[in-house]
Length: 120
Image (cartoon, rainbow, N blue to C red):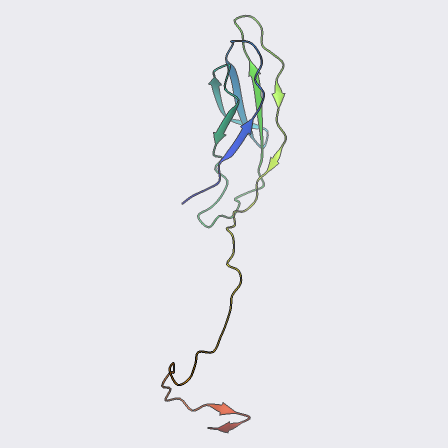
């Protein structure tokens, strides 16, 4: 089963210190990763859907990024809050129906056809 991934992008600081990225699901920490100073994005998956793509519960996701030195941390920067929704795929479009040329294309039917309450 394929599910959507989320991606967070940011502008890293100008130091050589690593960054700590934290992902929160409904304000609860679900993952934390240390990234190099130059990295500016992360892709991740949040388990939120059943096998049919329906959202299991209301879920909001937030990401924080912070640079950590040996002595001092930077200010913590938070992303916007994203509300997850049920997964849907693009529906078919432009359905066209036509009658095929008769008698080149036909169907042999043994069942009587009823038109205006008369059997034909």
